Length: 385
Image 1: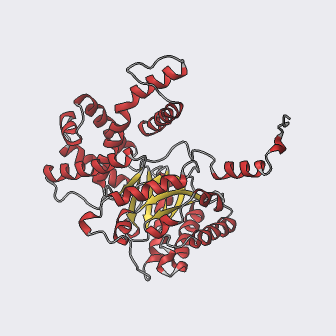
Image 2: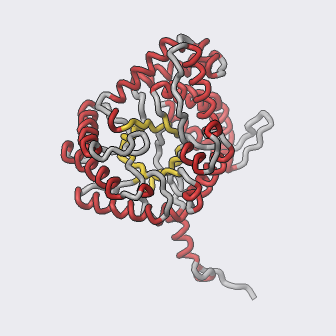
Image 3: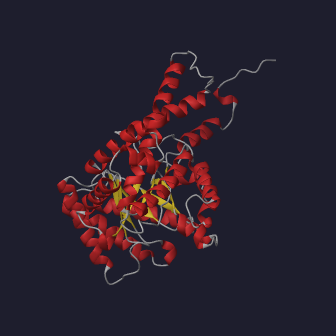
């Protein structure tokens, strides 16, 4: 006997499908910054972005005189190096920082007598940058961790900063986010999200979102797709913290590096947990600056940073932290080279698929690969704009 198939033939399907759409809505924002720049709060001012861009440009002019030098430092064909260098110069002059965090955590330290004052100065600087048109497309602050045992300090800083900006501008400019570090207990996420709800209600703000930092194996253990949905859309991104993570595993100092296999393991868990949720992923940083102003030392720093950026890109992490103006050079150069090297090939293959013809070259693309190439082209267009 044939069974008549209706929507009721699978009890519970509608609820399960609703949960699927809630947990896995797909890609997040159309644009994701290629980096986040961290600046300690006591060193942040309205001129910080311009200062970083100016320093990076000077380094390029002094130590990356032309395409030949760019090709040698970054291991590129000279034709590609010429385009990368030209784009790099334009970027550093126009938009040296895409995403900015005023750091009140590790980069700032424990300074109870000074923190409120630096919060006020930071809010003033943001207002000045907004007025001058120099506020990055993404911006915000990193507060102290609840794991430190003093959540009041973290929330006081967040409240003071956001309130200070709103009082000066009459609104909270778009692109704002707050970074929540060292999340050792899952319960801290709900507690922090609840405070964001109270803050936005008190100030009449649109929904406030935040990023978590994955800096300990304890955090990795509770990452899962349902986490984003449980926070009701407030979780914007997950950032990997290489040094706290490797230290918590007991790795020796010389092995505390972004390309260590232990870091790859953590990042792959982050990818598995947040795939399809719309939560962005961001890699960590290189804790180094040029040992001196000599060309040899500057080039050595750029080469090492470029290695790490390429490692992140190869593992599907398209954003990372930058901690020094010199990092802007190797960050943008490596990102541009990564996208430009494959752009034409991906475009041809996607067009061939859409036109239902052979791509040639022995390539037999699967639908999932074509979808990924189309996404890569969109990401490249956004990064190269």
